[in-house]
Length: 339
Image (cartoon, rainbow, N blue to C red; front, side):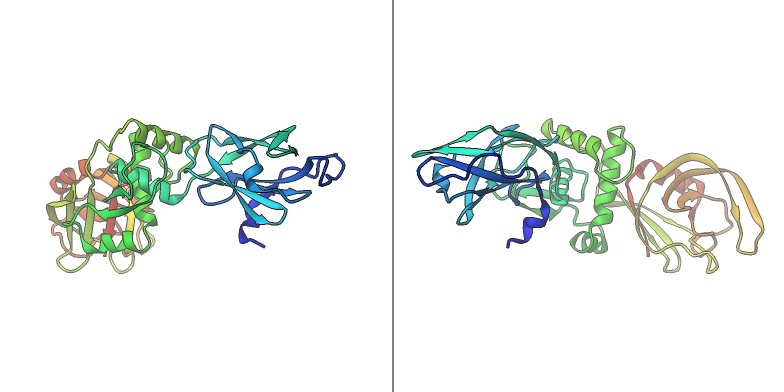
């Protein structure tokens, strides 16, 4: 039995007709309909009361139109597989036959309308975000196409050779945080909640942006923080290192979290309050140019007598002028690495 059966939901039972004979031309149908339409899974599976040649069956009718082909999977079972990639952003309505009247060819009888939800693959999201320049990669279709939205076969290529190899390795390995940052950047650009997760509203906006070729209005930026003494920050704008500064990361009792994270919250100025490792509290007003990237850890300005050693409670501190330079280039979704 095919493994994809678990992804199908039974949408109907055997219709109330007499079992068909070899001569009466009436073939009853039990239909299983996919809960979602994807490029690689069957849309419908039909179990027939007697064998029929797939060539005799009329095309499956979907709205919006989506071309499919019938495939024989058992003596009395056929499946409709998509020929083209699904592109509807709201799902499909399928005319599922409850029976066929057959002679040389067959005619569908009393079709039942069934609506499927729409799903999209991560690969499709990556394709569109790359095409719109929200990712540090480009996308090249295997075959040139004028369809600006449909998921198509193709390959990704690294777009910024001067970005650190570690970021490229992150894309090649576990790219989820790279994709999360790009989604957040797209969301904030399109006035959507910056969840980093693609929901219906984000998908519709992404499809619309791809259809009209509305590219990311900002360059691809990245922040790399090294805890190797002296501690430094390097800002990459449009994939090129444009600014360096000494910084302070977390002390051993409150270390900065190592890893790569997207900026998720920003303030031009903020009062920072919290608890020191010894249990005392702090209340620091007027902290400028704040970009939070992981929990309570942020890039920001802070006055110290020196920079380049662990002195903070987890944040990445830098001189006011340096923070002011970095801040415009760290919109929501910008990736920050601390290593």
